[in-house]
Image 1 (tube, helix red, strand yellow):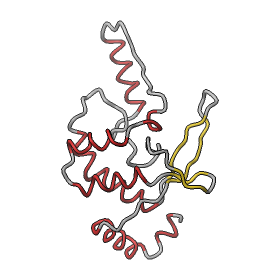
Image 2 (spheres, one colour; image 1 turned 180 degrees about the vertical axis):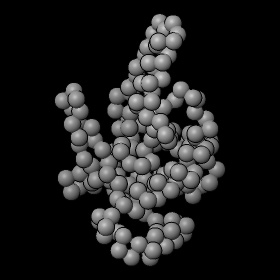
Image 3 (tube, helix red, strand yellow; image 1 turned 90 degrees about the vertical axis):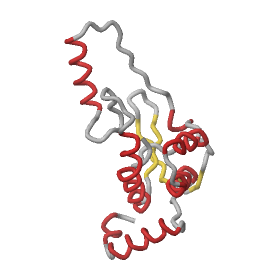
Image 4 (tube, helix red, strand yellow; image 1 turned 30 degrees about the vertical axis):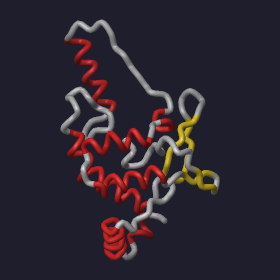
Length: 168
């Protein structure tokens, strides 16, 4: 469904979505798997979420998750934070390198992190900061929704599709 199609009768659709989320009847839709090329010649699997999943994920992220976790980040953290991005991190690095004596710069990337993250551990970590079981259940629904790839549903029972609103 496109955003334009979803917009037809928007008030009713949003009211219905709101009711389903609050009653527990909301069901996450499998993400559509899209592989995008990487500079090294490989591909990065992205999960394109359905419109209603995007709406609910955006609400949960902005209203619940960001306020909880934003307070934990240090000033030099830039990844997936509101109002900060890779260019801001590079600017801060350039300032640090020119104004201080720096001996080392370390750049790390965890290969296939999103493909291999333990769902059990992820939920355990979230439960340390999020007491509302309804929020935890929503996140579990997204993790267990699986992906549609070449018209077939698949769930590897580990990892999470990269690329949705709530992924970071």
